[in-house]
Image (cartoon, one colour):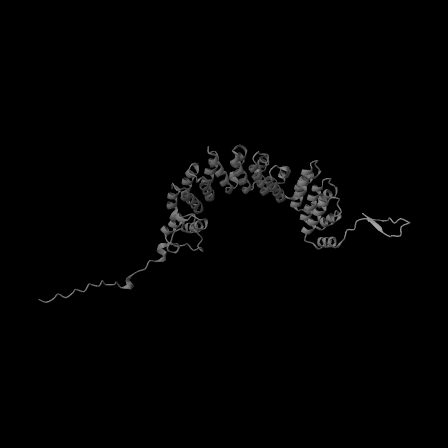
Amino acid sequence: MTAQEPQTPEIPKIPNASKITPPKLEDYRIPASPGYALPETRHIMSAPELGGESAILAEFDAAARSDHFSIALQKIIRCRDNVVPALLERLESDEVALAKKAAIALGYLRSPLAIAPLIEATKNPYRQIIWQAASALSWIGSADAINALIALLHHPSIQVQAAVAKALGRASLPAVSPLVDALKYNDDLVKVHAAHSLGQINSPLAVTTLIAALENNSKAVRLEAAWALGQIKSPISVHALARLLTDNDISVQSQAVQALKSIGGPATISAVAKMLSTPSSHTRSVAARTLGQIGMEEVVPLLAQVLRDDEYAYVRCDAALALGEIGTHDAVFYLSQSLKDSDRSVRSAILRALAQINSLEAQEILQNIRHSVSIPNYSVSNLRDFGDESDFTTIQG
């Protein structure tokens, strides 16, 4: 009996490589949606280049750090409408962080399909994504989105109203009147964001209401109203802002100074200069410092008069330092004229002011002071008794 020969396994045939057609790059092109088409000169990223839709969404979901999220968001934006349905699903997610990211991405994509879901997300104050959803609607910026935000200013939730007031800062003129009403009648939290948004829109129509808001009991409202008036730069507001220079909160004072500096001009100088003649030494001191921060050459004679005549040394110190901030030729002259002030603290402030001024004449004055020696007045008495043979002299100061 003959032993059976082992069978050789059949080797599968390899198809001709020339018959395999590789996928074309055009097969993966992602179309831009109508109305949001990209310029022809811009390269539309394809799915293989980006890593594929699933890979992009996975990266988007996993992004926890801001830099990772920024990279994922850029890929989402380049994918455009391909991922809008997936983002809308994530907007409804119970995972708050994922829903927030989806709202931000939908805002950047500016798809009309996202308006209605974002409005619903904004209406629900318990979902904790109202700020991101409201911002996304403002980024979309269509008439429907803005009208929906304006309507939400009357939502019963303070949080929703505040989120909408903040978002309307991108809405331009249609939002001015609703924001002015919110600044008049709503909660302080809403007023803070309404004032800031009015400053962003930069409309003179809001000046009167913002001036009234400077009297609000909340320092946050006063601060944002002062900032907004500084953005609008209306001379009408300078007297009201000048009154804030003596506010009991230092941050409000500082913001008022910045607003006045931003407005500038004769109206600002006049409003602050009036404070130099008030009976309150504290008010005069604040006014002197403010004029220095405004930094206009026209105020130098006013500060020089305070440095020369004010009865309080600390007010004269502030006037000297203010002249140092302005640093003009006249400022150096007036400082040098007061170098012999009777108060040591004022003399020290003058030296600091001169040191701050970067000019040859100021440095020359300081150099002369360093090399001069102040010799007090001495009286010399000869106390030798006429019958005494010793000879000594006493010098008395």
